[in-house]
Length: 79
Image 1 (spheres, rainbow, N blue to C red):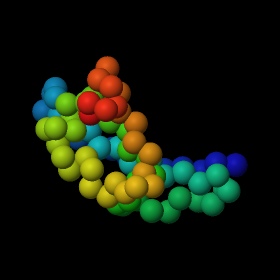
Image 2: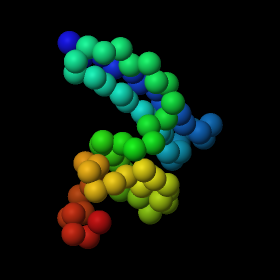
Image 3: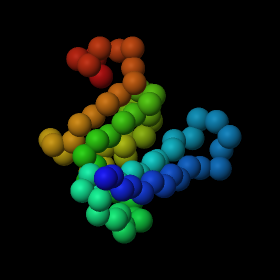
Image 4: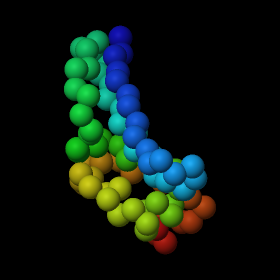
């Protein structure tokens, strides 16, 4: 079965602050022992397109192998 670990960090502002969430999961049942931030993500999910312009650090660790999901009404070509 699957095993996983999740943690989030966010600023003290009430609105508009970016939230960083890290998820690790194994499908082979191995326990997840790491609790450090994910440095090379397999998937990057951005829930508001403005985060890309305002927080370029979103792209840290992203490689050609990273799947990127962006919630946006803008076409992928314009992003």
